[in-house]
Length: 365
Ligand code: AMO
Image (tube, rainbow, N blue to C red; front, side):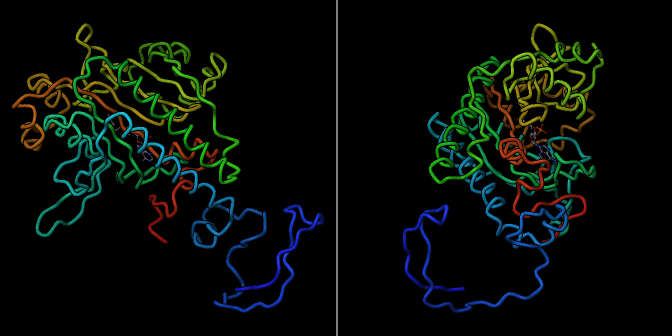
């Protein structure tokens, strides 16, 4: 609809002005009835909303999420570039996955099989060997997650970083928390300036974020030395405990045991305690947002890790070559942008954080 008229100041309207209509023309006719109300506040269920996503996105409250997402991505780019990182793009069509075979999507690549990248893990490490000492990438990652949960989707945006000449995971945590705090702060400024209602819900972050060791959390849960990763309910219980301990929204879980990271062949085991790694997660109120740590940069221990994970070094030839000609100590992390948007916008379901989400059952629209 195209309208014209005269804008007049008035106290009767909460916006302080009204439009005296002179003419109106229909520029594009909509079919009726609409499958989804665009102005009514009554929420349709999420599946119906996603089935008719274009209409759903016309709601200002839904669009506000994507304005937040855009500001957050801009904030991240600025925070990385400010710290001397170079933005990179790595292949998404791969011969080999990095995070184990179970969650790979296979595609027919001419006359041979290929896979969609679950993570840029191998490439970001190879770039450290190439002399790009600080890299980051914001790109899609694909995981064949059959489980139908509010925190998993099959296509997500991964924000990955890799840093060379780092020998202490604390240095990585310091970088990550600084980058997150700067990006959330920049997002708040943008949203406040545009009057986006989601600005009010953004947490005010204090550095450093608290750190709790894996063993401490296991103690809280009453399962010391269980030797397996935390499940969703356990992550939530840890989040509740942290809320009581410190009230901080973001916190690190540190010193993951080797048993939990057995399949993560690139994770460096502690020099002083091979039963533990230099790996950590960053969580937000019970939701895992990022994970990372120091990598194994020495070829022989890396080959030993591959063997104990039951992987064939022959499948990783291009990756391993990067370690043959000099690789400095390095580390990095992967952060799920969709989960972070879910957390910051207070969304019940991660699907709401993407324009057109993909999951086990949804390939349309
Ligand atoms: P990880 O597998 O823990 O680590 O993934 C990193 C982050 O990506 C997000 N994420 C997901 N988000 C939505 N749906 C999914 N199915 C999904 N899977 C993962 C989470 C998670 O914390 N290569 C390592 C990172 C590294 O060590 O640098 C990796 O991919 O927010």
